[in-house]
Image 1: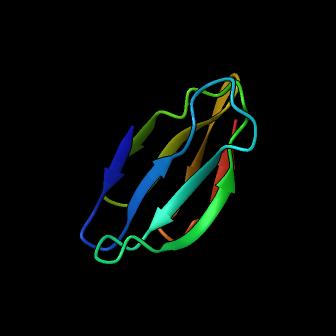
Image 2: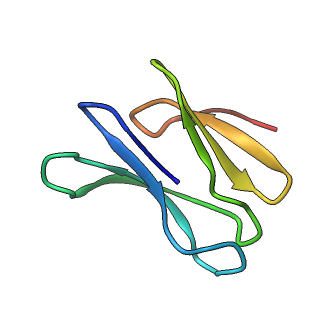
Image 3: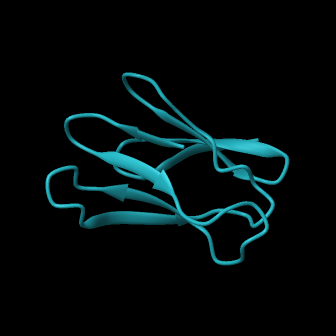
Length: 76
């Protein structure tokens, strides 16, 4: 899934089972990568964006919360 605000777009590349997957924070105007974070190969990669945070299913059986700048707030 993908999610976006006026300031940043988020997406996870690949599909579950692929190695080397990344969560990307992109400039929505240029498409250039601002930051990347690793995603477990077995993770779903689903995203949920609120007004202040991004929740990403970046682990096989868990999720993480990120700021728009790509800083991990917590994982479980």
